[in-house]
Image (cartoon, rainbow, N blue to C red; front, top):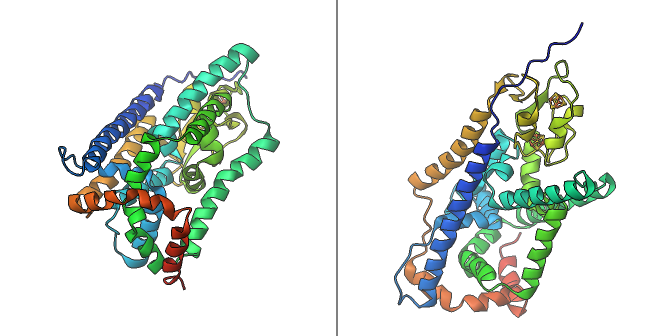
Length: 361
Ligand code: SF4
Ligand code: SF4
């Protein structure tokens, strides 16, 4: 008997995903402008108009945030140098646990840029080669493990090599306190070498989709691990599937969605492109592994944004958003900011290590 194919009439979510990505890009740009004004204030030694430092900048301090999380778990206290970073870090982890690695495809501005470059590259590839290029598996797998090695290095260094005293020592250090300002100057006064590295990454992202996210981003590794533990999974109903392969073609992570019943991959970023592409009703859906119930695309979108902002609001109303570094202290520390450059490479690093070692077990 011929199978009756019911057309999938559900509206795609990609337009709304793009709106959400643009919203977060706008937030990051806003934070960048505010931080630029704050840095200007520091540069003039407090002579120009004061602009509040935006705590959202701490989203770009994942190592400090990871240390703060460890410190919080061990002591029950939130270190006050970069408290907002901790809440943003927890928000990212929670969103990615509940809805898979969705932070990468819905919120992360780097993910957005990477996706835009990948789309651009794919258009060129389809024109030139009539298909999108894919890295052969035997190279892809070892390269994908690189980001886990980088993450492993940080996790091992923080959770296994450092005692809580050493963590506190680092969090209290001038280097950590001024790390956001130093990061700003890394981009504001970018070196030729860094510019070359960034350009190469851009070009590689056009050639190989999501090059940075797939192979090098330690955040991507952490969230990829959480994706595997997430209760939300993309499920294919093989009874109604017509094997059209549209889902696999739409997948930016090259997952063979059409060959599995459940997508169980650390590369699935819950972008829902495959779900949108499926032409058959109730065939490809995101479902909870517990209730086996379908989660609507709208629920995914609202859930991702909702959880993220909820955690940030908790940080704000609990008084853990603005840090405890006064204007005066910033001005005073700014005078010595260049001396902090030597901490990584000169004799100062030995001095710092010696000091820190006192706190190691
Ligand atoms: S499997 Fe689907 S949801 Fe996951 S990355 Fe691929 S297209 Fe996106
Ligand atoms: S898009 Fe994928 S899940 Fe949907 S019918 Fe085609 S092969 Fe099956």
